[in-house]
Image (cartoon, rainbow, N blue to C red):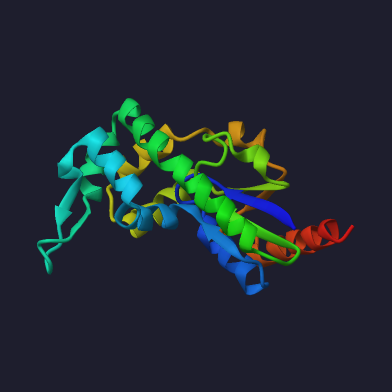
Length: 203
């Protein structure tokens, strides 16, 4: 079975592309979504975050005051303009996500399976994949999508984009590129890759 990575910067449309692959029958591991679950459900991760960043990173649920949930707004404000704090968080989260990824891939069958994650290249896990798809979009379109989705200001989105690895650098690691520019049709691009992966898996 082929292992396919799907990556790209904020607002490029990684999830949209992966949803098309899912319609074609390919399983997808959504790493960023899984991380959000683990913040609240993984005791090891919760303990490490509290030890590193303090107890205020978990706050009582509104319904049940005895149950604590991850304070994502507090963490976001802490790491937003502090690359050292962001690196600390990544050092805690990514090893656990990597472990979850391996467990997930081990359970899959079929010709190929995909992992969608924003930081495949930055975390040096790109070499664990047979193919790496990079989703690209113009900056103005990325800004528009991210503002609508995340309900953040344009300045905040711009800072996030600027903090990420430049597209030209990511291109060096990608084996496949999908243009999600609202001009080039997505489905034919995904179908083409789907057939390529099937052929490669069965060769």
